[in-house]
Amino acid sequence: MTFESAARKYLDDMQHQVRVSTFEIKKSIFRNYLTPYFKNKSIAKITPKDIRSWQKNILSKNIADTYLRRINTELSAIFNYATRYYGLTEKSA
Image (tube, rainbow, N blue to C red; front, side, top):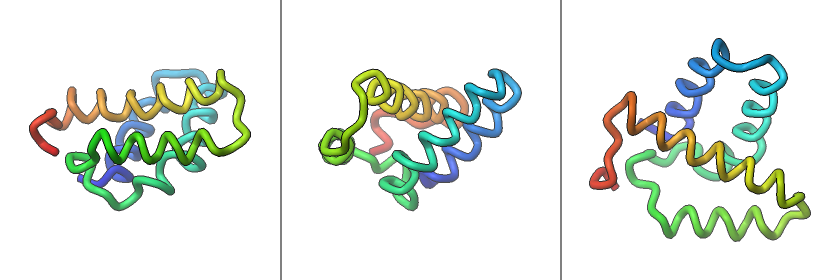
């Protein structure tokens, strides 16, 4: 499963569980900060090194610390979702 596919499934599920404003923020984060970087990569093959590289890229942008934490939280959420509902394991990578 690609990162983009997992993200779409996660967002589809979240759409009915959070407020509209929260969902729009989630969509924006995935569209602007997560999917462009990890889009076609298999979620099972994303390594800690890939994440560090992505974080360095994000840190180079002029983004408020609180929003950076929110972006990182959403990245973590997609991995947690894929682990819980699609059998992603640490050994998958």
